[in-house]
Length: 111
Image (cartoon, rainbow, N blue to C red; front, top):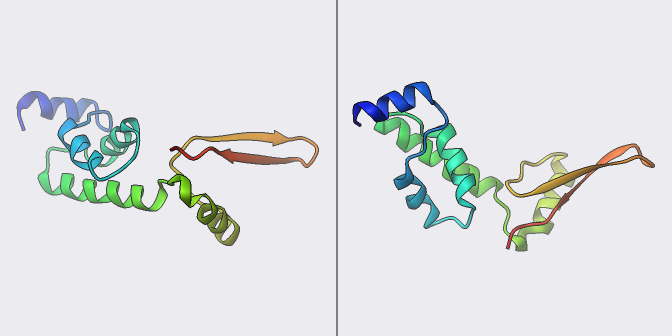
């Protein structure tokens, strides 16, 4: 890694994204690029190759466990019912239902 890359990682930790990693993971995952870049920035912002490899595996695991395909909507609802909470990587809207005094979430799973 060159000096500029080291300085970028030092001063902008969590905000530097290696585009080669984005392309590598994007080929196997049907997720928006901004999601990949956010996760890579969080888990792969290092100049240590072993740390990068661990970060890539972490990103892949997070995507496998939390990115929802449209045909998995019922599976997610079931997990929420069983566990009580579930992390979803997708667009979620939350509104307060004043009559019931509860928050209600709505997911429109990406196509």
